[in-house]
Image (cartoon, rainbow, N blue to C red; front, side, top):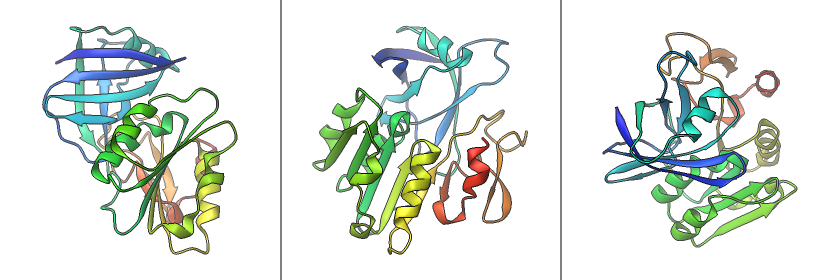
Length: 233
């Protein structure tokens, strides 16, 4: 068990949870979190937002019983973390852009720390949240409220694009990348049971084969993604 350092509400239903301890993780990986005994049955998979020498942070949205229980945590409370799990974003090569939509900005702060010269694009439906951390790391941050952040991205300027956000945003970005030399990698969200590929609850189709988001992902090359499959998640 680990101890909560801080659990701050940043916006409506948006919280940033910081947990004490020395952890390691690649950008785009996730932990399984729980602060309850038997109900809900499943832990909650949440991507790593930030890492320091003595803490790990998670940016999450409250949308069910598990995340509601997480949102009630206070400094000094105990929490169980398992991980890190999954395949994160690949090693950057050349010019890189990070594109996040809504709570999809969560895994991109750690990516921005690992790729400080990356261009960062953050899109929000209404009020932005968690932007300060990006400005502290990157000199090139574009923030858009309303509309779609995809409109601000010119794929021809980049060799790699790492993105996380709503399926519609990711699909629109994938279409915009077509015909350019940019390689798009997308982080996909899906409910998971175990995080280690044992329960098969997070399967989807990628590159014409059945893949598990927890072990084969959550990051996949966009060109291998079956978007129709994702719309049914």
